[in-house]
Image 1 (tube, one colour):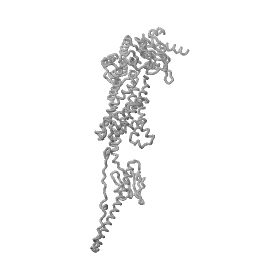
Image 2 (cartoon, rainbow over the protein chains, first blue to last red):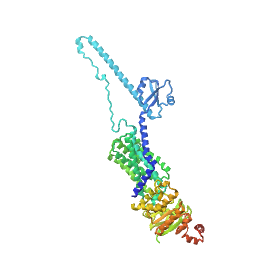
Image 3 (cartoon, rainbow over the protein chains, first blue to last red):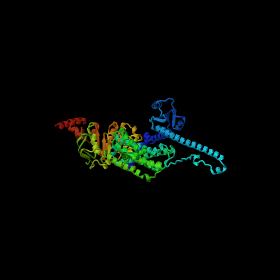
Image 4 (tube, helix red, strand yellow):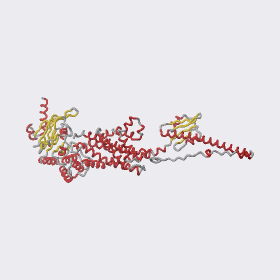
Length: 389
Length: 245
């Protein structure tokens, strides 16, 4: 009963504080929308490249929609051209060699130029091959015609014995392969955003719940209401559970808002069950909550609470799957496994992108629950600081 | 008379600075015990040790025979802290209701208790307002109302009359007097001599020492003066002398 009383109070306080409520629900939508557009436009990057002494046919081959080629009339050093005109690269032909210089300030653009030039070189080589076979084909046809001529001039008896050489079949048309691509997860237009969505969904829930719950317990302590609360026969565990259920409910609302926004406004498809997504987010929010409450024990003010963000929250992003954990150094992988967000994001990715069922994400889910239990216990111990019994 | 609260040989230090020196006191039923002394004398520290919010370095505190800290005993204590620990975004009524529910006040008694306690401090008209819109005095009164909400057997009130106008102060004292007659025990702290005069028993505290104790009338007689302020000054001096020798 006392747990519910505290839960109810937190709910009322939360709904009266419109700005914080807006922060919980609208800020993640704002950030996600922003990311949605940012990472969409990422595929439309255009790199500027200067060129000197390159034949127009080669330029035509290099040219594509991600590249804008500017011809330079005079032989200027590559570094100067790139600096003066802020090009992403410069290509020039000297002594029969192609020399490409990259600005390399934006690795994406460098990659575009690299790919374009390499593709162009391959194309040129193929063309040369094709034209070579074409030439030999023309030569063969000529020879055939000459043979026919000779045949006509020969006596009929001999000419009958000479069968007309036929042109080899494979010379007639270079076999064209048709490419069809299938995607196991997502669609051909899956952007980087689709990949990151599960990670950021988990992160948003984690971050906001961590911050708000931590600060609210801190406020409770600094306004002395915690002392007042502990002067009633309430159990310390009842305060912790009251907070967990109160902010847990807020976290459910937050997650639902974010998930529905992603599905219906941003048009992201969630392959697995939405309920499992909500369940994972809820569990993650609970961990964030218990961590926030615990960390707030060590903070004397809201300002000090914010100082925990770079230590407790930011590192979690790195281990949440944005960088594949399997490729990390051994000791970094160990760190990844003590990060709640690592399990949360991996479970969310599996459900959202790979249609995983609850049974298959059970290992990650149990890990999240284990974190929850550990932090609840730590909180109970931490609360002893304020009242011994 | 039963001892509601006993404090025996309590010492307390913070950061190696001694705050309480061998404090002994007994609060009985039917009695208002006043702790009087300037700010910084250690009154609030004594209160916190009684409530079990702080552990004495040595010595013992018992309430209704139970050594503190004890969670169950808190059910019988109405506590008012020196700072108004209230939920500012809630209304006065919601604050009262919240604490009533924590004390397990039954549903059928809930509204009656809220109306009664708000009445004691003349706050009925303002219960619908959020506490953030309350004045300092109103917050003080709401804190007092909360301390009465579960009809406790012991009231521990830290500076209850600060910021309360004289007329209401009179009303509150009459109410406290009534509770004492009903057999409740009341401990209050104050630095106002007028409040001290209302108490049945006084403990004068200076720099963590209890310098003298007794009823207001007997103290005046003992020190041959006609007001409590004089008692405090004289007792303080003699205490200094006895400490020096």
